[in-house]
Length: 130
Image (tube, rainbow, N blue to C red; front, side, top):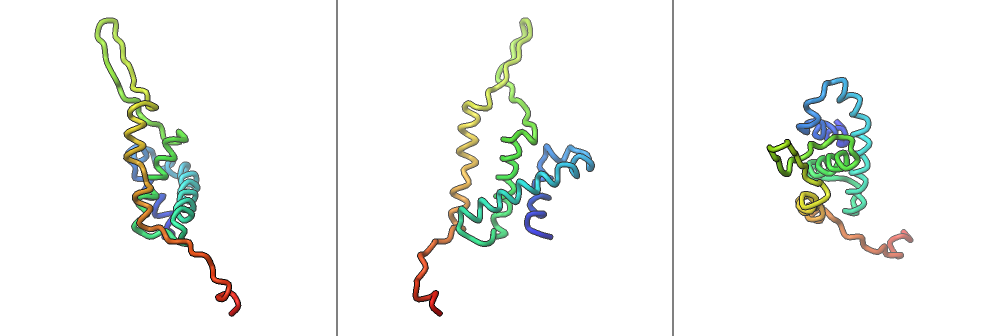
């Protein structure tokens, strides 16, 4: 199984996607595969690598899920902030506030990717003459 397909299968195991019917999953699969390939390219560029190590596949799946949420391909449930009983009032938490700040901290993938980063060394002109 190709790496992108393995990661796509991991993304499809997300609890919000697991609820979907097989037909809905089949409709989403090409789109998710496109997102996975974009994420793999970004990881390769960031880490200066030609491959993505197997240890980073889970990180790639998480980044893909985040992209799907941010592009609203996967709908997020609204969190309730407060409930009043007299005349019934329900207030939802603004996802762009404190939740987003905590989310940004938890989803900072830089610290996970840096371990796989390779140095980009200048080429030696003497090596090219051979």
